[in-house]
Length: 122
Ligand SMILES: [Zn+2]
Image (cartoon, rainbow, N blue to C red; front, side, top):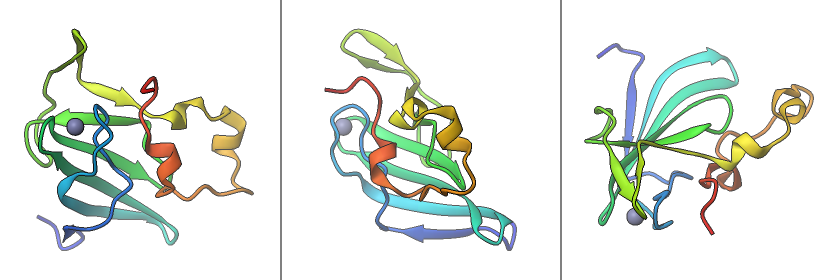
């Protein structure tokens, strides 16, 4: 583990269970580095008591996908949701217009929870 790595435990994260929308427990945010002075690189992790561990990585912008994992920072795992195999859950951030996503004059808060919701859920 490098000296750059910092873990925070039981913290608030916009990450919620992409299957049922529940708040997660045992949340953790690992700061993996700093890309620029304003852009940090983080991994958010938490556990849904019913659906297991999930994590999402952000680099200055909301995550594109939430991944089902075996444990924090572990391997991806297969999850069956309504008969469909899922390994990752694309977020609504993908629905934002590309030009808006890339517009540096209107920076988006990467922790804005509205962008962390999974697509196609209700
Ligand atoms: Zn759940």
